[in-house]
Amino acid sequence: MGEQASDYHRGEMQIQEQLATYDLFMGMTKWGSLALAALLLLFVVWFCTPGGFMAGLISAAVTAVIGFVLLRDKPEQAH
Image (cartoon, rainbow, N blue to C red; front, side, top):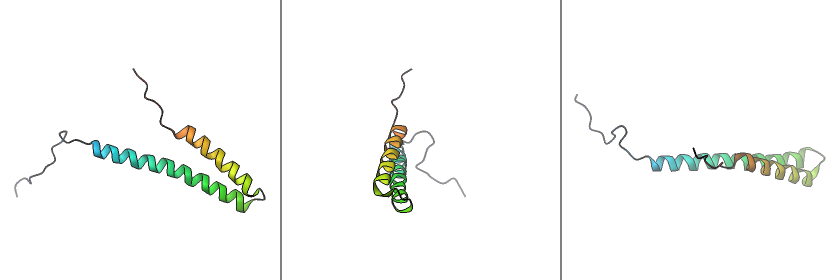
């Protein structure tokens, strides 16, 4: 049982595709979660409270705007 041949050599392979996939996945997770939270809030307020559609729409819009402000990418600080 000798050593197996492998294409992987630690520290020598490019990982740009892995980084791009990770960034895409994290972005979709972040923005998808915000959209789902706003939509869920809209439906809960609309159907489960006497506030109705307009109260649900306003609360979902406020949640979406606050979430967008908090979740957007911040610029990198130069050293």
